[in-house]
Amino acid sequence: MRIIVIGAVAAGTSAATKARRNNDNAEIVIYEKDKDISYSGCGLPYYIGGEISDVGELTPRDSAFFKKKYNIDIFTGHEVLKIHSDKKEVTVKNLLTNEIFNDSYDELVIGTGAVPFVPTVEGIDKSHVFFLRNVQSARNIRNFITTNKPKKAIIAGTGFIGFEMLENLMDDGISVTVVEKQNQITPNLDEDMAAYLESQLIKKNITIIKDNSIVKIDEDSATLEDGTIVESEMIIMATGVRPNVALAKEAGVEIGVTGAIKVDKKMKTNVDHIYACGDCIETYSQITGKSVYRPLGSTANKTGRIAGDVLTGGTLEYRGNLGTGIFKLFNMAIANTGLSEREAIKEGYDVLVCHNIKPDKAAYFNGTEMVIKAIADKKSERILGVQIVGYEGVDKRIDVFATLITYGAKVDELFHLDLAYAPPFSTTKDPVHYTGMILD
Ligand code: FAD
Image (cartoon, rainbow, N blue to C red; front, side, top):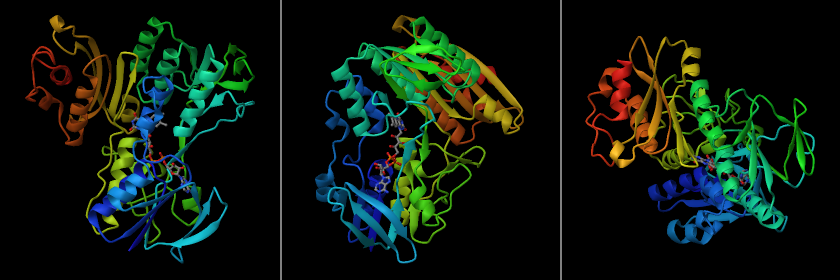
């Protein structure tokens, strides 16, 4: 069996290594157009901020590692130009030599990921405007900062990448203005939780401009929609990503309602012997069953593993997601899982909502305030979603809530959970218990 994988970051390498674990004899080849492989995109902001001094720490595995440990051949600098599903072949271009050749597969995995969304803005192609997506883009940003020593920057977009960059540019001594197109920050949070987060950021003297967007970029400033001119020597566009589906689409692979590749629970596309995984596919919500686009490393690894398992005869199936996510901003942690109140109402739920403000641990262990918003369905009493903004212990609570939602917990079950307690870690009744007590 010859397996070809396109893309060698999270999904592609997960698919290939799982296939190898299941099958000792298959020939496994990955084509990757970039030079970096199997890296932690999630760590890139911290390289830019200097917390990680060597970008090599984020790319610990090279092609030689995959060859030695898994007998997988990874060809970097090789772009797949076309998929011929009728002949089960791909056309590949060696970007170094310009050689073009065909290679044949028995099973093909598309792990082409996502690309940054580039809004139409005058001057967006200037050399001080950056999109952070891969290791090379992080190197470019780091080099620009080291060489030009900018004092002022704009970050457009307040998703997790925008805010992780805010912290890291400030660590580089750069004064940052944040510009958000919507009338609230952090689109994954409900308006009230976003307002609370914003109030915490304002206390740290961060300038946030909402309901506005960049329309023109000059060398040392940007003009916003309402005419405001913001001085900036560098701009980070953190305006989201789009699934990279052109290659798949051209090969007749079906694209779903979200614009990403449609796959079944086994990561099979509509075309025989073609699988897809990672940021190029749409998945589905565990709660509503509806298609969603959640380009996250956690999901990319999981869906990659499932593709690699199934194409080598395994039985793994995807079970949906809750869009669970977390990010760090200074000493804060912001997390969400499941439906927001806004989404739950849109889905037709009659919602029960609670806001629960509690310390994460005993006061004599410097417990800090954590704000939990929980959303439940009035009729079934099932928990639908949770958002948390806090300092310590947010990661632990959000994962407890994600687990509860996964297993369909009802509000009255929260109080009865036998959670671990000792003063350095929690309070006698944990914030999770209180959430259930308030909702019930
Ligand atoms: P990608 O990482 O996009 O990789 C796809 C690869 O395919 C690319 O290298 C591309 O060059 C290659 N490719 C595309 N087309 C071709 C072709 N035709 N031929 C050959 N090669 C091709 N996720 C989290 O869960 N938590 C986080 O904290 C988090 N933080 C992040 C921070 C940043 C700054 C960024 C950028 C992302 C972050 N993510 C996070 C998201 C996570 O990195 C992605 O979900 C993950 O990288 C997706 O992996 P992937 O393999 O599906 O796609």
